[in-house]
Image (tube, rainbow, N blue to C red; front, side):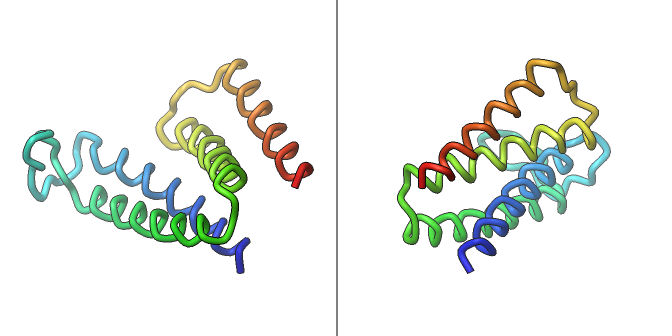
Length: 117
């Protein structure tokens, strides 16, 4: 069950970020403008916010089941690496040698954390 919760968190956090980025892109139909920040909010943005809500609730549940020093770095690492690939594939953002090296180091760190457990 815990693995399902971890996958749910990572997936919903990545989907949330991706949809919010897509929803703020030019060409999206704006439903309303958020006051104070003056940001146009589209249906895709709202779906991204809902995905983030799911990730938040899942994260709270995971925090009750694991040590903070274990679960937070583990999940953040996976979200970061997946978002980097999503940004490269979907938004055509650059993927440099340094980013590849950074991803490798992050994954090595995750492995070390898992081995130490």
